[in-house]
Image 1 (cartoon, rainbow, N blue to C red):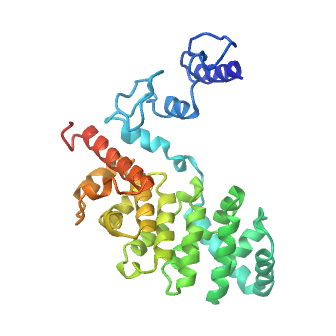
Image 2 (cartoon, helix red, strand yellow):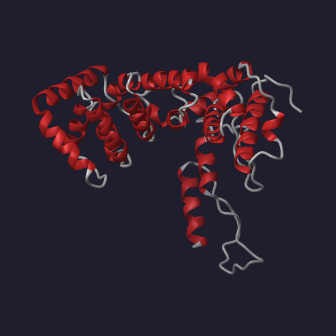
Image 3 (cartoon, helix red, strand yellow):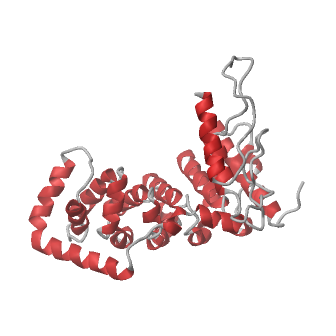
Length: 341
């Protein structure tokens, strides 16, 4: 197994124009003797994604260092270019504006013609386990989102959230026009519809193709998360932050989060633990982007940092707080925004 793993690693390195790792090929391993270190998947990710196309090695990184072999790091000069390369959504072919409008028109037409049949299909989905949808079934669910029945829309969104566990469904629902419909549902007055739409966004955002078309949804979600009137509705706020966290995995819409940064810092300092934890997860995703750091440093907050890293802080929260502060400091140093040391 060790030989096969080393051969696999060497093959990948050769295919990418790099030298294979040298070292003994002995099978005589024991707790006291192991073969030369084999690249882990994390190392492979850094080897192939954190290098410039011209072969120049980066010199600074916001990652843990390994003893051997040295891991390539992100340089201040090339970090923005590398971040854009990591955005897989840049290479996904999505619906054009005309295709989106056509999908909306088809959904409305389908609802007008067959609402009774579509409602019966919805009841069938609710009484069975989630599964992969046919293109017509995806169009049927999206068509029901144009109904005037708020309760039916909420039930449809819950069904869509469950079905979005399948990658193929995420794609087919996008092609049926769901991402065009979601922003208006998020902005609507009915809480049950809003909550179901937020949960649908969270699940649909686990698809890079969907992320590319979710800018309008992000704008509404940011407004919802920034609404102080919802502070007592912890379920709604937590799910909204979760949806934004999933979308923020890639940097495509990070610039839309800048007005929310003071609010996120405030939640980190003073919100209940569930909200605090989710806010930290979102902040960490955003802090991986160098372009966000100046906005984070400029954000006003009332709380102090000492209490966030106190010994009495729960371990999982302390770990994430430390990760966030480390990301901010390392990026600030890399960009010359703070003095090292």
